[in-house]
Image (tube, rainbow, N blue to C red; front, side, top):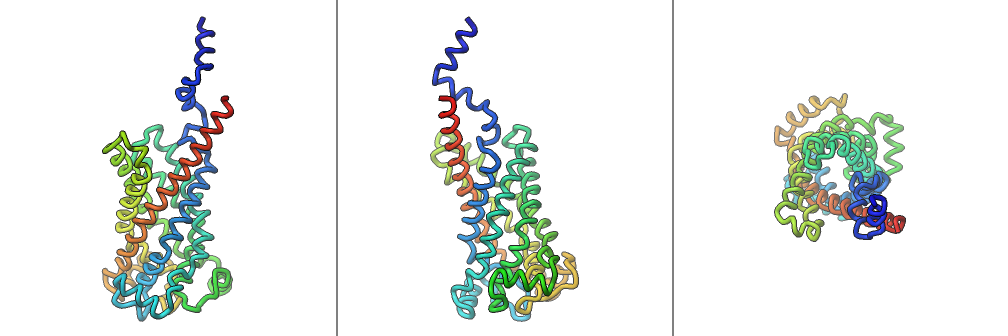
Length: 325
């Protein structure tokens, strides 16, 4: 009789949704890790391409030069760039960003998802696990992204200094050596580790809070929830880590367009130079465009990432249904 009951259950189509969560493919958001990589790559590329002009303004404001853009307000900075170099200057270096953002974010999100699954131990509300997973993700992705980020920032500043991405790469290799591509890596990791820890913990907590406000409509408002949580997380993390971002810009742009060149990549030496020339306010240069960049950028990135995940989840579900049928 038990065998007959079991067979009846499997023949009943209403039983499938109860059984499907036990399938291995759904053990982590219903996705395989190559699908996380594709989702992350698309999200990162869309995010950085959409917000690139704001990033260019931030780079100009943070670069410490004999004649920096003054005053350093966002509106004045934009007017100065357009007046001196033309509107196209806001997009100089976007090719380098395109080459780096996709692969870096593929690594970023896949490592995050792997680490989150491992550290959360089945608890989706573990903020410490989200923060630690974010740190692992940024260490791995920064190793991929830092060289192209350096090229991107030099192109953003270099009015006729470089002809393009490959000209910049060849000249840096010839004149400064391979180490120049990673001169800011330590600073980048030290900046992005707390940035990502704050970002992911804030994102997951805000998303959870927003879903609890109206759980009955959580699925209908999913895009708005991801965008709002992402914007809050991006803005907070950006504000906290601006000083280290200024140091990173200094190291990546040294020697370009009159920017200071440093004897070594010591963070303390760079900070001392900034404070000596521009005071402590120099460590917060570009904080407004940085927040203006990361708030909408994170909203775009997370909503795009979650939309891609939803696409793959529905694809996997339909594939599983066809196999079971």
